[in-house]
Length: 266
Image (cartoon, rainbow, N blue to C red):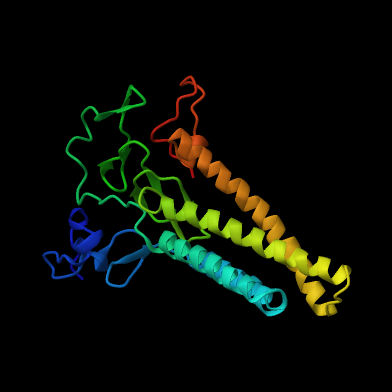
């Protein structure tokens, strides 16, 4: 099969349907490991197993909540639960299937590779750009080559298997929205489950199966909610500082606390 040059790849917007010299669509010959669907309009990571497990676990927990807890409280409890669930599911899908900011590769190594590397101004200081031998490009600041997806990604934060995608420039806001909304959903489910236990203890005795379900949900959503709230606060702190997770864990001890703009950690 004749291949289209990697430097011709265009995956964003309408460019995903552009044809190369061989007549192939650009997304049909994409060189990375990402899974691409909907004629190039959706792009995600190569391994969906943890993402599917995430969906099954979430829907199972919420199924127990709606079937045994919410229905015994008030109809508005179910409505609020569906709203929070819908919001978190929307952010999850957007984070999972949005192009995170993949940079196009060059067909051949750059002719400037042998010369002095280009520079950029970061935090008022001049830094040299690092060269990616896989993509044959000089990576801009905050860019990193993801070994899981095998692509250079703009403003790379981290690769998250739970959303099956890199979290970076173009889907970071959806990822933070997902973490924040699922945190609220966990707190909400935990609070409603505690309410059922309290109601049962104070007089309106509930079936043993309902109490057992409530206890399971309290333990599960309570632990998960606390963890995710801390994670959401962590990312809010990163946003306030204007850095990524990749930069945060890659502080250079020889740079007086400055963040390495192209640290290459996995």
